Image (cartoon, rainbow, N blue to C red; front, side):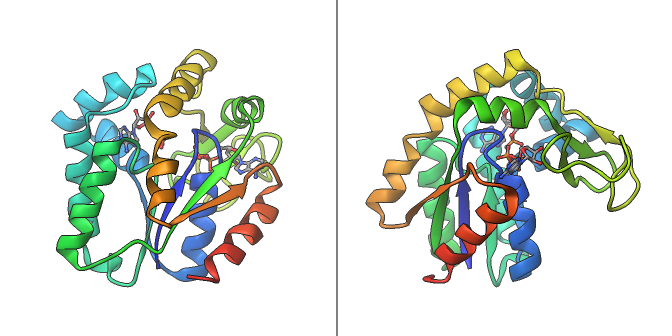
Length: 215
Ligand code: ADP
Ligand code: AMP
C-alpha cells in the first residue's frame, strides 16, 4: 500500500504513520525525520537544511526530492510506504509522480488530516520526542508514564527547536501557501481522502483504517 499523509504541522501525520507502520509492516518515510538526522550528523546537507528548518521555512525542493528518490528505491519499500511530510510543494508532487513511474509504482491514497489552527498550536507546543528512539508524545494528550522519559525505551524526551510559537505561525503560513494546494492536486487525481483529525488518536486511526479498506 503506497500512501501519503497530508496535513499541516501538528495534524498527527507522524503519530498516525507510526500506527500504520505497526498495522501494515511498511516503512514510514518522514522527510522531517531524515532532515533532522542530517542536521544532527552536521552533514553539508544538514547544515544547509537547518537554516530553513529553524526559520519554519521549507528546505529547497531539489534537496528533499533527492533524499526521497533514494529512499523509495530501497528494498523495504517494495511492498509499500507511508510518506509523511512529503510532498509539500507542487514541484515535489510532480517529481514524486515521475520517481514512482520510474519505479513502476503508483499511489493508492492521499489522506488529508483536517485540524483547527488553535488545536495545532496546542499540539505542537506540547509535543515531545524521544532523543533515542524518536517516539512522539504529547504532554496532555499522549503523556509518557514518567515525566521526561520515553515509555518505550527510557530515553530522554526533548522539545523540537522549531516547535516554538513564532516558528509555528510561520510553518502554518508556509503550509497554507505551498502545501494546501496539493489537496486539489490529488483530488483531481481521484486519490484524496479528507479525514477529520480533531478526534483523539485512536478515533483518527480508526477513520484512516476505514478509508484504507477501499484501497
Ligand atoms: P505532525 O507529524 O503532523 O507534525 P504529530 O504526529 O507529531 O504531527 O503530532 C503533533 C502532536 O500532537 C504530538 O505531540 C502528538 O502526540 C499529538 N497528537 C497527534 N494526534 C493527536 C490527536 N488526534 N489528538 C491529540 N493530540 C494528538
Ligand atoms: P516536519 O517534521 O514534517 O514537521 O518537518 C520539519 C521541517 O523540515 C519543515 O518545517 C521543513 O523545514 C523541513 N521539511 C520537511 N519535509 C519537507 C519537505 N517535503 N519539503 C521541504 N522542507 C521539508
